[in-house]
Image 1 (tube, rainbow over the protein chains, first blue to last red):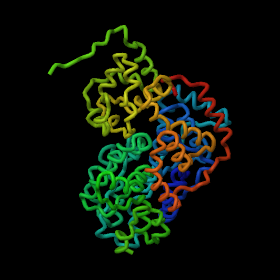
Image 2: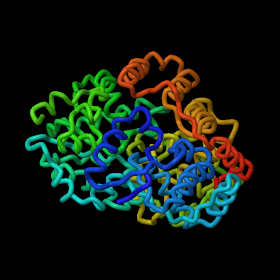
Image 3: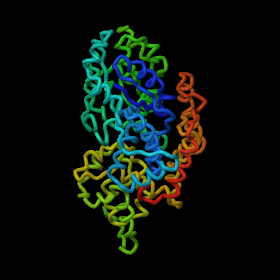
Image 4: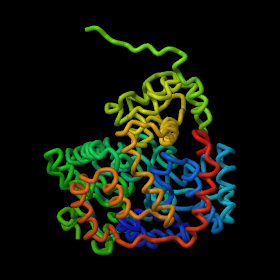
Length: 288
Length: 198
């Protein structure tokens, strides 16, 4: 299956392991990704807070470029997914938005007719590829590995296009298909504080702490996530959370394709596990 | 204990504030708010807010423009959309909060602490405008320097760790079509309608 691939800015920097592992497992799952040429930032939450018009236009440029190819656009990053999807929906529902965006695109000689379907990578893996194909690729037995599936907010809300907005299960389904155990994790769709981490850090730390705490209580070995913002909050700030809350969290946070690639027999190096600050070596070595 | 209540006289209220909010795409939905409080009960940051989301909606409808735009509530919204998916009246609450942020952004006489919280966005804009993409190391550094210079010492160890893991590349990427992108963004700025489309 052919898709236009929209990695997004985070996947070029803090979350390059997400990009690397996605590209590595894609051929195994018959996902043919062609990176969108000359893509730009989706605008993220920051633009939406100041200029909705600019935010829609930024996303629409990507959609217009993707429309030329005609394939669905796949975003691994949840904020990109939301931004692109929201632009599609607002352009369809609100003529004044469509008008502004169309005129702005025309300035650069582009047009967008609203035909590109925006997909999250998680959606593609579960619903287009299917869990049977996931199982068929297994090379390692992950039996006994306890995994907490953390979706974050923007993967599933507000539209809930492919999973429940409050009780999602697609990530858990992947964990089970990989032969690992998906632990009870009621915090799976609660906010990590990503979008306020820059402005109200204290609160973001607290929100991330609550998520780590829930995973620790269920004795999860690792947490997997489909969102770069969730990842950086739970992972890079874990030591700061420990300090602030006198806690001893040592939970590796993996992007879900990293765990899939590992289960498919790819080396830890191939999956860029060494780019993680909280090393998953101890948790994964029994399965190597 | 004697409870003190402030009484607002009708002529002190901004009666056109509601029209401002109605003009946001989807904003007219707030007419339907039944003040049930599901939003406040679902909000992970409501306990920190000076006014809960439910109160903010009542205040918007009452015309308490200044209080709403100066409230910390709209800044504490972390965009998790939990209120929005639970609202029994299908009001796009998070999107309305975004619109309130945008209106507040354009008010020049904001309270100082609130203005500080807005410092991330202009830096982000500048980087995206210049390059077409975000450049995380530049964003982090410039934000720390302008908003909270003392914070940089606290955050530096994390930046250093990320850097040595190869997760904060120094050179940012610039897209080929950055000039066209700038023209598009300029067009938006020229055609900005407060509270409305933008």
